Length: 254
Ligand code: SF4
Image 1: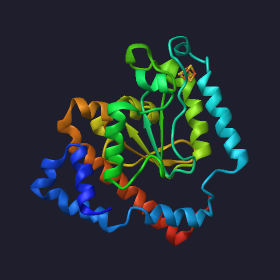
Image 2: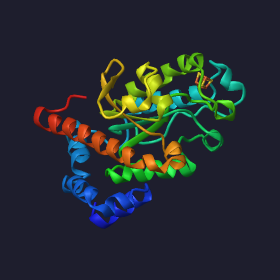
Image 3: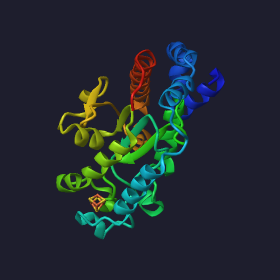
Image 4: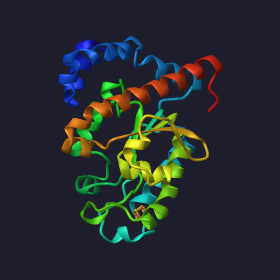
């Protein structure tokens, strides 16, 4: 990605002033100097993965999507329009996980649409990612809680097995939990978001590396924290680059 486009993305996520002050210019160019497309491309070659998943895997995805869409395992089924599984390529290296569908997501059956979705897209593009090619996006909870209230523990407990199945099919290299609710539920902790940022956690049986940052809806309300979100994104990008460099040296066996 060239410098001008990156500057536009950084502006879009609201950190233009910070860039203008100079400190982020070096950081942005450092990311630019490692071509964004090279690692995923190398990985795809190493995996020998076709653009589309094999038919058996595609069938598993389809049945999971339909199960979630019509699921009645917790009380939320009675107030939502549909369960929302997620969106993105099923061989994506990155898995972004938010809290739960909002009103628009509930209607359209897709996570992260609307203003928060646009900000998420801009955040991802700032580190060379694109939800159409290398990011899968989902939520901890697949159905919208009424009035966008916080998910209840029993709802999360009923729904998490879907996410676990999703992760088993997707086999992401890295997970990005956006927002306190997603982070706390995925990591089974009450720790505040500020204490969970800035380090690598691990999730599930596959020990998938997991990095925490703010939810884009929160950043829309609190733009002063966008700068910290940018730090998190660069951190996550660095973790991913280390992973892919490691697999370039040692081979990848998925
Ligand atoms: S939130 Fe999850 S468990 Fe509850 S009805 Fe929706 S899909 Fe089913």
